Structure formats: structure tokens, C-alpha cells
Image (tube, rainbow, N blue to C red; front, side, top):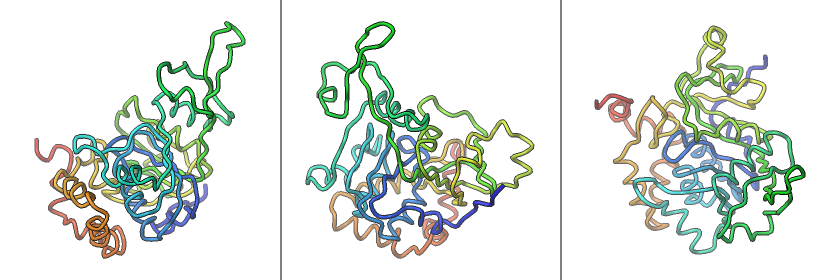
Length: 294
């Protein structure tokens, strides 16, 4: 097996200006924020984002001026309300938006993962979504039932955040994953897959419990260690959201000027992920450990 362990900076270098980038995670969970901060530090531009239910990662990249287009089912801060940077960019016409239903977006990723040009879906009635040029109607060759089709959603690079992995890129998740988790499908729909993990573990640990490997090394381009790599969001069973920092993010993002200052403090002045974590503070991070406040 080929060694695929890289630094966050090296891993982020796989993303170039103009790439189509898929961002994993769901809502405030498992957002690949450590990797996205590296993209901001590298001043990557003109990205087209593909997401599921996204929040912090999309809002960060949009607020930093890295994005020209977005496609997915949702961008928001969940219980904190809308994503201010994203909303402002949409209202000002600075990014192109393609809104999808959950079934359509899943089918687009799944088609790419399966190597198919498209997949049929149950038609959506009563919305303008069905009238778009990228949605086609066909008849089922077996029953004659009317179906709609969506084209495969191919990404140049997919960024995921996960629990653990070894130096060869075998990605491990030792806890139950929710039914709305499509990270695996998104990863398979991409030319390159970059995964940040909470910790790098010995390969022997992976070999002892192969059933816990949900992404094999053959699918991964690079793996990088990033403890608290989804902060200030959460990582399932590992740590919870930092509600104070989320509110600070939303407050700062209410204007472009204040978010520029926020970016300077949290991304620019923090030269790397380790410096960023030191700024947050070990005590504060420890307080977010799942179950620490039970």
C-alpha cells in the first residue's frame, strides 16, 4: 500500500482555482473546516461547490471570496438561522445557485459514484425544479411510468472529515452513522478524495477490525491529521458544537467588513491548524468533548 499521509497544507494543494469541490458533512456535523481554512490561506478562487446539507464550510469559503457557484439542498447554521455570508452573496448575485431536492442531489452523487451518466428519479411535481433544463423526463422501458432523470455530479476533489484513518488512507468510523450520511457516496463521485481525520491510527489497528473501515485506501488521495478538524462544528460522538463560537461567527458574518476581521483573526493570524487550536485554547476544546457536560 502507498503511504498517503500528508499535512493539511499539502492536502489542500490538490485543490486548484476553478475546481468543482464536494464538501462532506451534514448540517453542523463533520464539516471539513480545517481543510477549508487551508483553502482560504492558499487564496483558492472560483470554486464550484457541491454539498449535501452544508453550513460552516460553505459559509466560510463564500465569505472568503473563494466560490463562484453552489449546488446542494441547504446552507444554513441550523439552530443559529441562515448562513449570513452565503445569503448575502446570493442576494447580491455574486454566486450562481442551483437548489436541489434531497432525492435529486443524492441521485446525482450516486450516478457519478456508479460511473453512470445519469439516474432516474421519482418526479417532483408542483415546483419549478422540474422545469429546469438539467432535469429530463423519460418513460420507464418496463412499465411506461413517467420518470425524471438527473445527470451525474462529478467533483474534481471531495473534502471529508472523519474519525480516524491510517497512513495509507484507510478511513475508520467506529460508531453508528446516520441514514442521511452520504459522505461515502460523495467520495466515490470524485476524481480525488481528501480526508482529514481526528487522529491517525496504526495500520495494525485497522487490520484488527477491518469491519470498521468505511472508506478503503484505494479510494483516498490523501489523509491528514486534524484534531478538532470540524470545529466550531461537531464530530459525531467526539465533540459537540461550540455554541459561543458559532454565535461569534454569525455575528461577524453580518457584514463583509466584520467577517474580514474575523477571517484575519481565525485564519490569517493563525498560520496553521495547530496555531488555530492554541488560539481557541485546550480548556475550551476539552469542554466540548461529547458527554463532558452530562
